[in-house]
Length: 327
Ligand SMILES: [Zn+2]
Image (cartoon, rainbow, N blue to C red; front, side):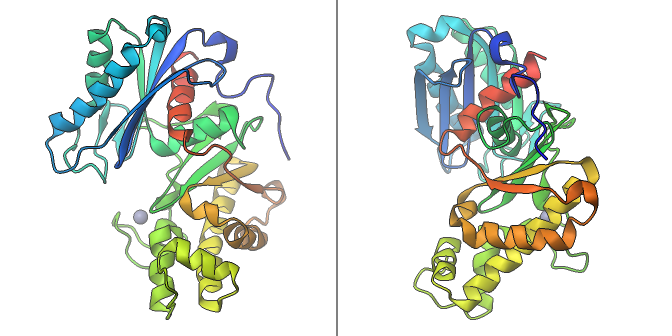
């Protein structure tokens, strides 16, 4: 069911994206930056821990240090654009972020502040802000498992569940940068209330947090009661652990099938810490798809692991910049 696009996928990009991209990836534990070549290599990288228990400007100071490190490199003069990926929620229409795991930033104007740091170092270049789910999607479409697919859903399943969409060969961030946020669609209309205020959300069933919580509630007593511990027990055949991953896989399958039915995605790429469980997760997802992806046009749906690892955030920020600024 693969629909290869023409020579180049996300970076509509590719050769059109001359010059280096400044990539900034902001998360709850680290702030990373890189200068990224059009081929995806990163000749210069920098990182700082995300400051905790400080005010908004102190968090921004760490971002400024990362930019300064990049600006000190001889390649800096080739910077042509900047992509900023951030933990969400983001509002790309206003350039602001309110990351759940960075309490000091609420409606923080990160895009304007990063642009000011770039300008301070002589790089007055266009910038774009995307959420981390959209960034991961851009990364997987450009250089990972969704490469060559014009219609793809990419998901991050870790402590939360996020995602993004490629539609018609293009990254589809939506007006505020949140399209494809599959963790908060409902797959259980009478389910538990989710942290977002909704009910029966995918995240409330399939996140690592939810898997571990459900397993413990069902009597799971392994030595490591985190999602990773439940995954290890499932691999060893422990029944409660297997049931916890089966339940999560079923929720993910329902969401993946709904997306395919709605917009004709032909592949779902799943990354994140919980996806590292491998077949323990992917087996149930694929098995349950038969129940939910029933119409002919959705029946050939593939579900595959993400290919980009630790650098996905930076690659994704760069890919999003090329995709959204150069098109
Ligand atoms: Zn929710």
